[in-house]
Length: 206
Image 1: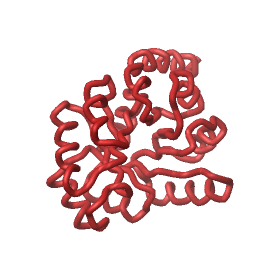
Image 2: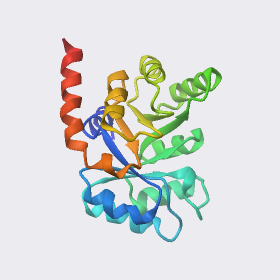
Image 3: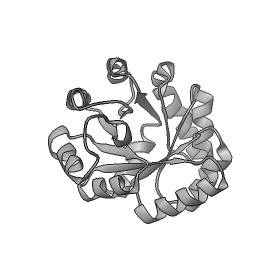
Image 4: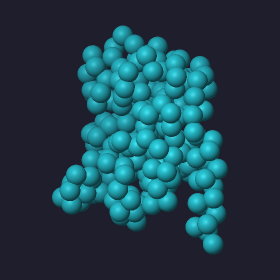
């Protein structure tokens, strides 16, 4: 997927359903969210969950660091692409992002911005690896979002403790395209947030 297409995918889906418990997958698929981050999964259920999301016409992203029962190597990435078939992957690990890019999967590099030193390391890493998007945590600090937006050309996703429409919009106003959240009530506000998002974009053009 090209950078342009990945930009449009996240821009058009400002709320991303993050799944930490497999039982929540039904609520995510039934919600208006078109992107689902799987922050869970193991050798027994990963293919079933991704298949269920794909069958609904939605985009599954597998968090490689949290999948259990698979060796995290180039063979697993190849197997993931050819047999399980998610839209993309999430990881904090440079080597996994690089291998996933080589296999043609959409990549989201997760960056933990805990202090200024972590910020410097994260930005250097993302500039080198060139993921299709970055997810920054914590996601409720507009100053950090703006700084990353100024430094990177990749689409920005925010995550961590995001529970309200106002919090999503504050992230978007600071430079993010989307927010990932496990807060189910927010999943169903996707359409309202998209309308507010359009207003923000229009105002920023003026």
